Length: 179
Image 1 (tube, rainbow, N blue to C red):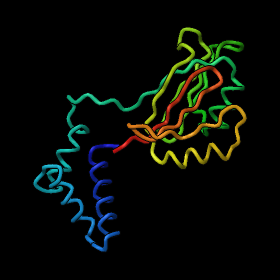
Image 2 (tube, rainbow, N blue to C red; image 1 turned 90 degrees about the vertical axis):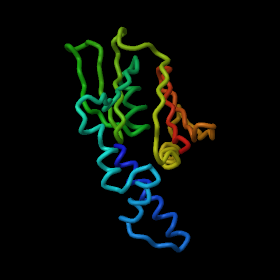
Image 3 (cartoon, rainbow, N blue to C red; image 1 turned 45 degrees about the vertical axis):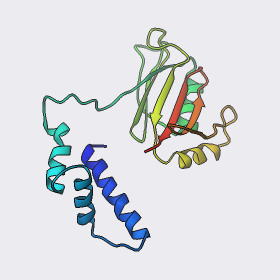
């Protein structure tokens, strides 16, 4: 999500909050209010300034991170990551038949790589994933009645967190952070 997208979301949330109090304002007015709250003269100035990271070629940007997690059993990995967590396979690679698997998975803008190669990763990794709508995700997993993992939700100072443990000792902490 870009800075401009975040500001637009703030404007939408402001408008909804005011509406729930019986105050109706147009979307353009909520954009102007957010722009002023962020220290800009108006929405056009805010939009241009906030979008600098996209237009400035000298700005360093990280567009995606794909943690590599060590696995030992393809069937168990697919059962856990695809069937239980709901990831889709984006690619598979083996140098030849009988060689270790390197597998790419994706779900909702999260990319994970799983590897049977001994040099790619160590078992027991811990991955922290900022998550939206974590209660819905928790409900989805809970309804699957997966025998080997029944994660709960934990309310922590930094957010609402749900940890899952894969069959290979890796942990993924999904967290809806406090804003």
